[in-house]
Image (cartoon, rainbow, N blue to C red; front, side, top):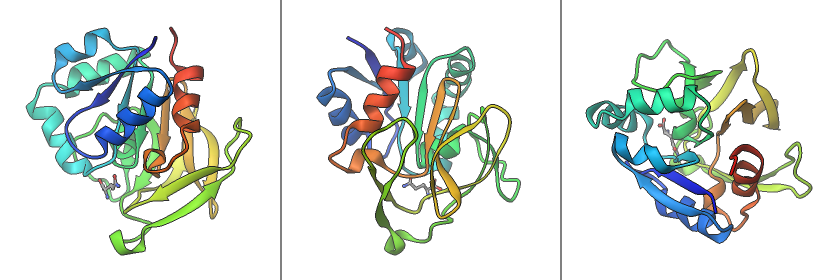
Length: 191
Ligand code: GLN
């Protein structure tokens, strides 16, 4: 059984946990550096990326987490989690983040909370269309070396992979469909 951590700072933690348990994983809330020791992969949930970044610094998690992912720990960032993974945030934002993925993101580019929407996406490697919930979602403006686009919406990538890192602009955990969690766990997490 695979042991998957969920960064337990804020955001849609329980929803990811429910999906992971539904597909047969052990789940752990990751709040401090020592929690990283026994997991095979980690989900960085949505929430508010500025406060998540600050709390990663305060808790001493930023550096150990960055090192673990840089060394190959599989990581899946959704929405704010994707912002934490991005090397560049449009406007040269200096907000604290892991900064490991060769993507440029623009925060809140899909509009306000009231502009939230649900759509179905074609995903490379998945046979069924994937329901996706966008909430104050970041848009991927550019992808660099090693980044593969797995799904796009209106000419922008919304699901990308770079080696051991997967990032989605949207929230897959707020639907009934576990396909993307299954993709992450079965294809990216060894065990
Ligand atoms: N707008 C948030 C941010 O910039 C992300 C929103 C989300 O995770 N649903 O961090």
